[in-house]
Structures are given as structure tokens and as C-alpha cells.
Length: 257
Figure (cartoon, rainbow, N blue to C red):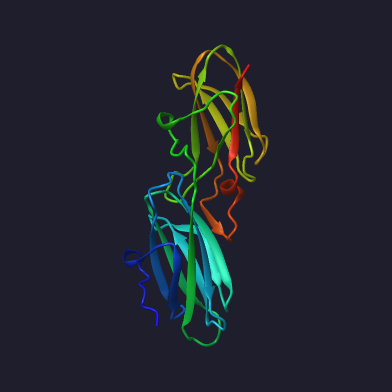
């Protein structure tokens, strides 16, 4: 039979992406696992997790994801009687992800329920990351559309911020446009001068809308910080379909007239 797996965080069984076989023996049986997330890419790794039980299972197998600080994530999957359940979680590089499988009584009998967990690792390639701070700012050329992801991650900052550095060669009107923002997400951009004084705020009229605006500027160096202001935990969710923000980058364009 399958080896006995501890349900404690401290004794979690190390695993890698692939297929893991396990078995819940009782309604309170918990199996704990831990994944070591690679240091690259800097934009993190997305883990898609599928849980499957055997037919005529006695227990529903609940699967939950936890951060390195052992805080539960919205990554949950449920499987019973040969069904499959799925979830995904986007995790910061060089951190750990805890996973727990738990049995919940489903039928009147109490036999063991074997399960299988399939874990797929999807690296998120975003060469700008990390660029949360002005010191890490990504150079942004004028009149050159630039693509990037809003990659909020478990074990990462509470909100995603992308920071850009602009060089304005002459006096004029600076125009900012951020398109393809994810549905359901509030996005705001703030422009700062070389003294880090706020010059202008560019905001959406509604979630998912284009961010656009303009402001007069003098020659010099500027920093543009793009924030996602979604308060829900968007680093993980149920289901096996990744959200649009992880499948399609947004596009930022800055021009001077």
C-alpha cells in the first residue's frame, strides 16, 4: 500500500511536479506535501494541480494549498468517486508551497480511498521582474508599446506593482495608455518626477477598462508605477483554467507630444 504520509507542516513530504499517489484512510486523515519553487523565472511559477480518486471511493479527497507562512490559499480541489478536481496557484520564486490532501466521509462505509495528484509547473516568463521599486524600474521607450504581466504571487507582495523609468527629452504633453488590463481588476498608474514628487494619477473608469490620460511635463527623468488594486487574493483559485491576466499580458504605451 501507499506509505503513511504525515499531515503536519513540519513533517511535510517533499515532492516535485509530476504524479503523486496517496491514500486517505479515514475522514480525518491528512497528507501534507511541500514543493520547493525554483529561483527562476523571477516572475514565479504557476502550479496546476489535479486530484483524482478511484471509482466507488468512500471519501471525498479535499486538496488545499498553503503559503510558506502556512496561510491557506484559495487553491482548493475536491474529488469523489472517480471524479477529478483541479486548482492552480502562482508562487513566488525561491519559496515553498505546502499542499494538503484530506479525506472527508462520503459514503456509509469507511474503506481507504486511494488518490492521485498530478502537478504541472508552468514558468511565467516576464523579463521585467522584479520591478516593484524605483531602483528596479524597467526602462520604457517613448512610442514603443510594451507588454508585461500582472503577476501577483503567493509568498510575494500583497499587491503587484510594475515600475517603469522614462526619459523625457523636451517639454510637452505626456500621454499614457494601458490596454488589455484583466477583467475584474482595478489598475492605477502614478507618475513621479526625478525628486519622486507625484505629478499625475491615471485611473480607469471601471474594472478592466483602458487606463488613459495625459499631463504636461518638463524635460527630465520620470518614474511611472503601475498598480493593481484588487483586494481579493488573486494568487490562486479553483478550476484548471488560468485567469486571463496570466494568459495575456497588458500593453503600456507612453508618448510625448
